[in-house]
Length: 138
Image 1: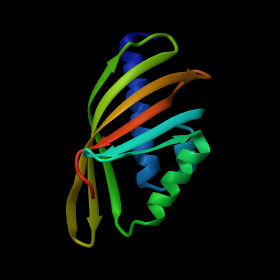
Image 2 (image 1 turned 180 degrees about the horizontal axis):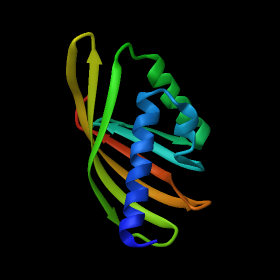
Image 3 (image 1 turned 90 degrees about the vertical axis):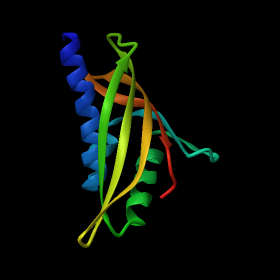
Image 4 (image 1 turned 60 degrees about the horizontal axis):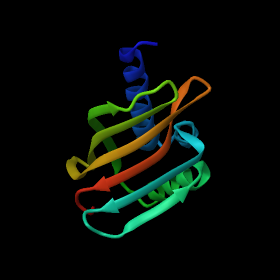
C-alpha cells in the first residue's frame, strides 16, 4: 500500500468509529480496537478519566454513555494528521466536533482532540491507545 492508501485506511477507521457510536453499533465499535486497547479522557483541565483497559471495558463505556443520552449524537472528525507511520503502527491526531440533535434543535456540545496510537491487526488498522481531550464539559 502507498501512503495515500494507508491514510485512507486510517481515515476509514476514524469514520467507522464515529458511525458505530452514533448508530449504536457496538459490534462495529469493538472491531475498531485491539483486544488490549487503552482509552482515556480529560474534560478541559479536569481529572483524567480512565484509563479504560481492554476492548470490552471500552465498549462497555460506550454502551453506558449511549444509554444515558436522549438525543442523537453526531461525531464529526476533521484535521486528521498521520505521523510516525510504519508498516504496523501509526500516530494520529484529529479534531472532534460533537453535535446533538434533539427535536428540531441542533447544538454543538463540545470540541475535542483525539490522540491515537494505531496498530495493524490482520491487515486492518485498530486503535491501540486513544485519548480524548474535550475542550468543554457537556
